[in-house]
Length: 360
Ligand SMILES: Nc1ncnc2c1ncn2[C@@H]1O[C@H](COP(=O)(O)OP(=O)(O)OP(=O)(O)O)[C@@H](O)[C@H]1O
Ligand SMILES: [Mg+2]
Image (cartoon, rainbow, N blue to C red; front, side, top):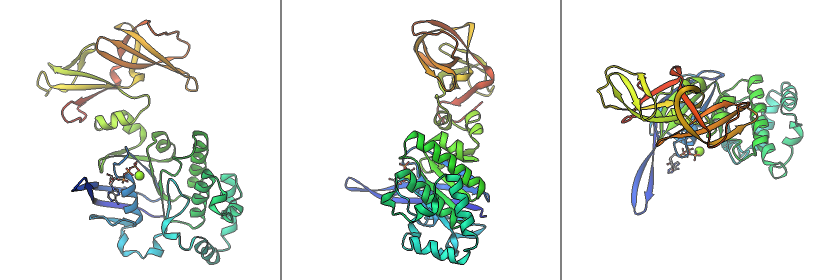
């Protein structure tokens, strides 16, 4: 298995904006290590540079600066045929640089280690639940979108890749098929561990598949960690709001004598080095808003049931502020009701309003 290292990788594209040439920094000084057999998800909004980064790791795009290494050997020093990159894209089952010899490559490989192949193909078929050997003989046009994606993955696995790169492979499948495909992929990667990078918009997908998640924004890596680390310990407002559904509540406020004060809530201790009047945003996840007698009175605006999770999301308003909280399904709450809210002090996240950085 292979360890992938990125050292200060950057890539700028020239684009024409109207009549003017403009520079777009698609990837900006990214350093990252993915140890052998690990699965890393790259999560970030559209246009933040995820695909560009993946193409650089694949060796399909050369970085302007920095270096990609496989097992400490610079990628540019590794001949194409020895790189062993398996890549699966959103809208096709093709792996670009194997494209020319699609079936030829497969059969060459079969000949080289043919004694291992039948067992592997049959094990993959078992896990994915379809006859891989039959599907491999079919033309892509005769396979559904989901089958194409899964065949692409399975086929790459029969070729024993060193590195597996996925660019939103399931994003155009419907929700049910997507969950099934995700479970299959997870099982395949457990059975045949390959160092993998998985690009996605979908935080549930990232959590389901990856050991660690790298959050990207405007070409830069903002934070790398497990979902729990990103959720409970976000480095800045961007990660706090990007990770977590339903979304985190944000309250405007300021520092007074080492305490935070907002419109409705207040009196929470914060860092003592902040000048009075410094504007600080308080982030509180919905599960840390408690229904408690004697708390802040708020009017219920909407109640959204989450049947599968056995809770209801309650949206409330008090003065100019709105927030949401989770209540047990059994509790009877209706729009127009008044409820009393308190914040669980173990779940308070403070952010500098100017920089967005976490300060407590
Ligand atoms: N070949 C190219 N030439 C010029 N600009 C490019 C090129 N490829 C990407 N870009 C620009 O680089 C930035 C990052 O693009 P990229 O495709 O890596 O984003 P992404 O995170 O994969 O987005 P999405 O989630 O929509 O797929 C964008 O501003 C994009 O317009
Ligand atoms: Mg992309």
